[in-house]
Image (cartoon, helix red, strand yellow):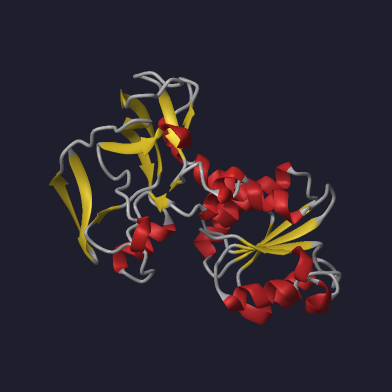
Length: 271
């Protein structure tokens, strides 16, 4: 099969690899669409330390079931599916309690540090356990399905934030996750969503998506501008989607009551 191999940092090459064969309880998926996560970009240049060459990256994907391993009963060849990026064992104490992200035996598709190593979906085929797959309606497009993991991150952030209809919420960062969070907050009924970023092109996209409150400055100045937007009242909650300590600290300054009262309402979400 053709695969896009990170053979060394900053070097991707199309190569031929054997088509993997499903073991019991596994399914072989013919990849139809795969997203490029920000973590893949940082893996490409070596800055994250979580993509050690050689590795086939890619974990936001969807496709068609091509073959079934022994014991797979709930799927059929030809089914349209997407899948989780974390391969969990399903048997350890964490898995039994629903905390599959802490599984003792976990692997992550397209990630190659330590015991996590597992080939990803920048390839014609990818192999995953049937237990992490999700069947899709046949009229659901594969590019949309490849976005489901990113969308689930945004929905999870909003669910944990405990926002209520009528709240004012600040989102720090207008990358993919930040923009998805902002849209999710609007669906949740927030009366005002303010997005802050240092990139005007990202904020322009936020405005195209219906986010009218945008702030293009960095650091403490951003916090001051957001307080202006809210009549010095601050926001009811802040969700940080950048992944830096400065962004977290400045998120605190945008909330009602300032940093002293804000810790419970700040959430940090960036994959």
